[in-house]
Length: 440
Ligand code: BGC
Image (cartoon, rainbow, N blue to C red; front, top):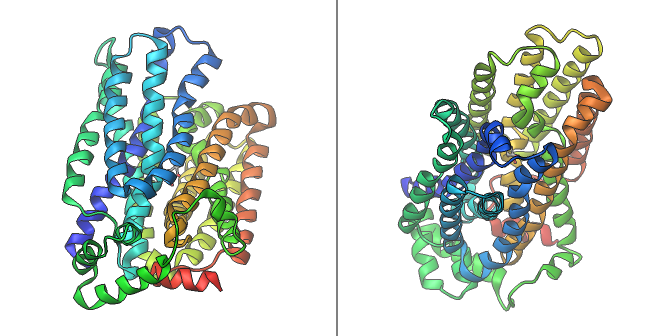
């Protein structure tokens, strides 16, 4: 694989790193912003979820503006928004300003969450596309870990500790902004804008002289005589099924419960009577396993395909959740087994649905509709994420851990069956070959 392509993918994946960081950093600030801004529990919920609202808008923005102004420029805009959000939220003296700054960060997360994986998919040679797009997931996971660590290191830094925690994000935002100057625009977008020569230059550097000309022709074919796309085009009979697959997969990635663990692990441990003491250790264990098994996915995804990985992963996730549920039902929650099942669950997610969702949604749609199609799928992901994170504490309290995790296990089973029946395999083919195949 060419070093150039790897470099491009790493730069784009910085968007994923900021996405991970921004969504996770807030957890460490909660205990401090709540008294500072005098927030009730409900007020805190709204403040924390302001990011998610920004996100939803950001994804739509990226869907439209990503086509009009290009993937690269929009990622630059996201980098600027991350920066402004970091400075703004860190220096906010009033709640309104704080929420405003976090919402801007959400906008950036929304934009990065679709454009980073999509941009990589559009630049990567077919053979390595799964691995390279998964780099984005790896970066998300690293971002989450960095946030937890930096929060941990900064927690004793005085009354402004939460401000420093939020400020940290300015550094990777600057890095993303400037490193984007080193990478080219997506060749698929360039062709859509009739900049064929530019596109060819990029393709030669990413795929080599021989394939570049063939690829250019194929991309041109798919974009021939096409007007600018609209969201309504997603409802065309040949596209609608793809749209549904994208949406349903994205929702499944969330409602199989990953963020109940990512956001609430300490709460779960408290719920089973384990102390907060080893919280850091648990966080390291969860983050570490997440990281290692994302690497495993990167090795496997182009070899065994997206589908097999998801099928295998969903089975594992289901078994781990079922195990967790049994522990809760039988009240055997005091020992190490809770942690073991949780780690097992994370491992299966990281090796499958975590990265594979981003890979598949970036591959599913035709060139002309990719950014819009992906944006609708990913908006569904963020909405599902919001619903799960809001309802999980209530479920845990009202339904008990046993039933809650049983429900998530059943959802994993549903995901498994759905993918088995409906999701096509996308490995190894160029985006244009997939486009041809899906249009039949
Ligand atoms: C999901 C996030 C999740 C993260 C955890 C991503 O693929 O979309 O919601 O927090 O993985 O690793």
